[in-house]
Structure formats: C-alpha cells, structure tokens
Length: 63
Image 1 (cartoon, rainbow, N blue to C red):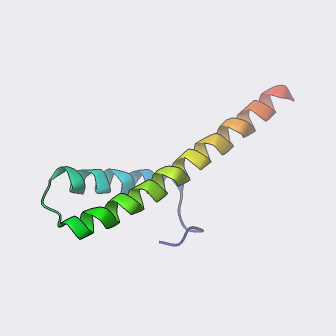
Image 2 (image 1 turned 45 degrees about the vertical axis):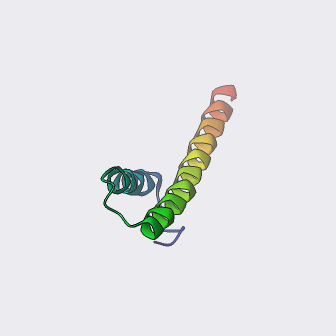
C-alpha cells in the first residue's frame, strides 16, 4: 500500500491484523520481524496523523 493511499483508518485496521497475527505465535521469526517493522511504521504514521489533527483542532479553537 502506498503512503498516499494510506488513511488513518486503514493503518489502524492493518495494525490490528498484525497484532492478531503476532499474538497467535505461529508466525515464523523472520515474518514476525517484518510484521513488527511494518507495525512500528504504521504506529508512527497514526501518531503523526493524530498529532496533526490535534494541532488543527487547537488552531481552530483559537480562532
């Protein structure tokens, strides 16, 4: 999925899928590492989106 197609909602859904896969403990180690890396990237994306939304709301409240 390209970053320009990624939305907050899609990222959260993918994070849930990754967490479910990792919790099952039946994913090979190399795949687990790849999933973990993808998850950290998605988590950072979501945090950035939330911070951006928070800043926008704060700015709108000041106006």
